Length: 119
Image (cartoon, rainbow, N blue to C red):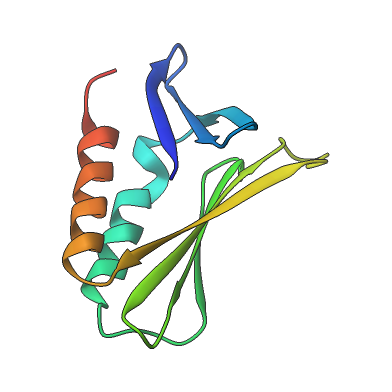
C-alpha cells in the first residue's frame, strides 16, 4: 500500500511504496491533493462497478493511481511512482485490492484526512 510520511518544505508530500528488499520514495507536489480524495470517494460511491480503467494523476504526474472494478466486488488500485518528466526514465507500480463499498469509503476518508491535515 502507498505509504505517506507527511509534508516537507514547499508544500510537497512524501510518498513511498515499501517492499522488501526494495524501497522507492519520491516527493509529490500537489495542490491540496489534486483531487485524489475526491477520486477515491467517487470510486467508493460506484461500488456496484464500472467498465474499464479510471485513472488519476498528480499535478506533475509523479504519482498515478489506476482503478479497475472486478466482477467479484473488489477494486484493484495500481499505485505508480514515476521519475519526473520529461525524462520519466523509471517507474514503480504496486497493486492493492479493496472491497468495494465500505473499505473504499474508509480509504477515501483516510486520504481526505491526510490531505487536509496541517503540515
